[in-house]
Image 1 (cartoon, rainbow, N blue to C red):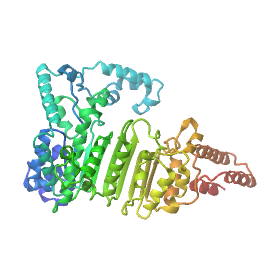
Image 2: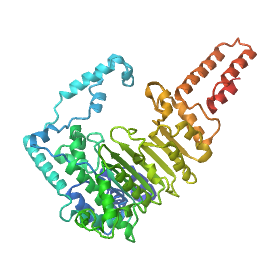
Image 3: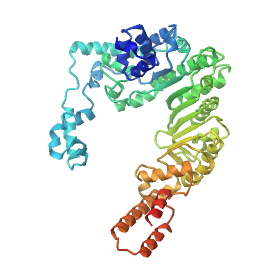
Image 4: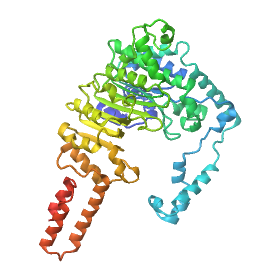
Length: 538
């Protein structure tokens, strides 16, 4: 065989470029390739709320070799909806190619002669009409061509998986899950994931296999069913999903001889999970709570917060809404955050489902209130998203971590009225921090009222030069650029006109050129790069 003479390192590089299906085929070639492909194939384990998933996990956990290969575990949180009848289920089947592929493929070809190359179609005046016509044609396509026997078989399979999902936590499944996960010796990353946002018919673990049997994927579930998914027993099932994962990670944290989970990612909607966690952590020994706690905690000595004790990376999304117990949610989240004392990377998204700034003036809705006295000594990367907070509290929180922080990201973050401005925070960045990377997007404070059409800072409309100057200043200091994006843009246009006129009017005297350039330089600071160009042009 040609590959027999190649170094193992080179073969590994080749295998890394192959697909999952290729790895499966390589396991049948010879022992060398089987060993290398098996490591890749079992490195990431994905499962849903179905019996075959927990059986596979349990079997891998008890296999002497395979249990050493798993490094990442993903628990899919998508739930099969409850259809009233087969007709309703069938109405949601859609096996057509995605509209985006249809529009850019066969639907677009007849129209290219009307407006030139495909890349120019969006600039053509008839673009909107083309898209509308394509959509009309697309809706006329058959959603599927399944036979009656195929539909009947698909409906039976769907009903079977739906029943498994409903009763997943009955019997031995929960305990087998915990046992199986606890035996994965080298597990480092764990996540609760959603595949509903993926493109239809793309490769999504769990669903790529399931879709072949039930002819549906999460993308087929209508938005109108979201309220049903997020409330009642559906919400409870999501809570159980996350709860049992933390239960298993907590078991590992108390054990020895296994690799501790270092990275965790999950999201919650509402306060159900956090109320349960708070109850388990603080009322497990309280009379009258025994029966309630036993549903969520299989070990009397176990705390869910133990699942966070060895983490170095944490990504948490918390979405709360009207009527939720925000204070208890914040306290329970804080319990987890403070338990993760070894964090090096924290990404936190904390927001109200309707409007992030609606309750910004209420302390309970500012998560930094609960961690303002806490320090993660090894924190190097911090990402805050979709939240409202006090500007002074935010900068104080950042300053406490100035010795370790090297990367910052603020996306859709609002400063409460009267608590400071982003201009003031960013101006002090290079004086307090030594950063290697920074990301700023969609930031708001009081001064945004001065912007046109109620805009925000760093909306993506200012141009790349504005971002480059702000990033350059935050990372390396120097002259502080104009912070107001509209003023910066206006002055940049003026400067470009100046250079254009300086070039075209070659008949100007040297004195006149110098006088014009000095007038430009007396305007507010316009950043290091523009000042440098001005001096060069003179």
